[in-house]
Length: 429
Image (cartoon, rainbow, N blue to C red; front, side, top):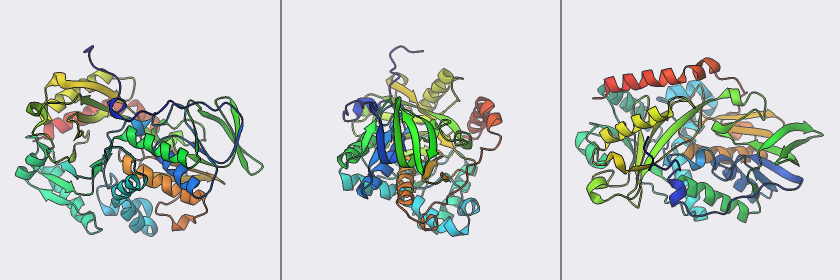
């Protein structure tokens, strides 16, 4: 293993500074306790505070410690659901149209939010390329995109010349373009949301993991950093880092570990042809790659890692080989940063909105599309706590169920990922 590679996410190098948070040091009473200081929790806290609620946010790490501050920062305006009929089957006729529109509009909603609060996070809505790794994948992707276009998705289809010009990669012969997609500096965004929340009176407590959550006398009691907390309502926003705080929630999702690598700013001889117009890119493989070019000419490249602790170095090495194949102008030694995070996968590949007890809501399971959809979820969770009827919301409230064959899937994750990688390599044209 190289010794000159930083294990720190590149976002910590380029994000505006924010003082480290402090833990809770006294007992606290609040209207709403939000667990999780990421995109979902902070977006919800902002909406709740604007409505006049006294809100406290708790995190076991600090603002953006989890997936929000480690993600690829791609703002992709759709769920990872191939066809509209798949979404309809998952949510039913009542919610289908609303959920389709809120997911397709999720990127626009994020960029409007950033402009509204003037958050400095390198927000760029230059479009998202989804490159086809095989002829079969091309046909499947285009069939799905045509179906989504009937609902206003606005996908465009690119052939080899435009695909290679806009991606800067010789590896792909076709792609689907979503003009509504884009990118943000994710750690800068989550820190910016925290600043907005605090300006509205929200109190944020770092290193204050919530424990012992119980309902008593119409209120919720819990502890955080050893202090007692009492709240009228609770909002759980822990996604891939969900623990056993509320029974069954952890088992409702499958944790997965994306991995990423990044460079320092590159010269034109290396990065010149890569993503010249600022698009983000991912592809259609089972183990997708995703990449972006930063305003300072850094490059970020990501993929899927094994479940910890198995095979970490092997997957990073595979990612480096993949980066070399997709973007051959970038030298292997230029990749100076590597890191991972943890996301949540659901059986039906759509986010889950739960209300398992009076005054308690939870949102999780963004399936790798969390930058945009987590902000939508935060808003919707807040609307519910503020009294919106469930049937008026764009996401259905669902019971908590364990993920199918969860233990078996977790035990076989490394083998399954290896098998998918082999199939992807065989198909890649």
